[in-house]
Image (tube, rainbow, N blue to C red):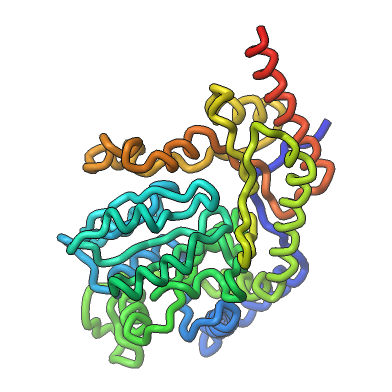
Length: 382
């Protein structure tokens, strides 16, 4: 009998253990920031951006990005309806209003056509999400940025290493943000990173992340009220080691997805992750969308798989459908305004995607999916 198969998890080697041990031993006193500096510098170079700031989470990175852009009460920020709540919650942290846009049926990322319908004079930023390791229509987004001047924040939390025309995810907006949660391809346990080419944004972020202190100013003489958003040396050391292995981590993700394709690509009732021309999807989550004509919801498949010791996750519920946003003006109209987000949200499941999955485990998962579909076909036949 197989052990329980995890939906997500890291790949840790002796390199990570060595780096963290060295940080625990040496990253104090005058060396307190040495791993932060190494990690930030290497990360900025990898993404192809000028500045990088290590933070405790991607959520804090979005919060700082919005604050650095001067967004506040009375402003609107467009965000995809299909994403984790962390993409949208910081909009409310700064007192602005999230506006939920629909997503593309193939990429599952924000629909630029939908974004255009939601732009108003109050729109001060657009957050686009590289969902599950894929990328949206970046040509269209960059054109929109040029036409409107509205800043773009790229939530690349799930997409480190994804590429479009050779440029890496996180480099397409005014600001890019990343997550290093324990489930992510590159992990620091918890943690995040903000990258930008804008000096004005970077300088504001550096001040606000450290209780409103200007670098080099008199100690404890705060210029403004800021935030406590810092990463520990141990996390930075772990992140540096993972970054030095990033190519093999991404290749492992793509290999695992190829196993799912081999097992499930001939099943007509399923749609798997999409990869557009000139795009490299890093498949953070291996996801399937059930054909609506089956007449089943994602929760039924999730229950079936969990009974077979297979952990999985639901595709993100549309933000406009969450109790957290019950008072939002789109809570009543979301399914009409954003039909693709609701279609995917009802029928999508994230299958096991942990970096240490082996071929045998993937075959077991796919056989369980096939048995579920066969049970549905039998029920329909009767």
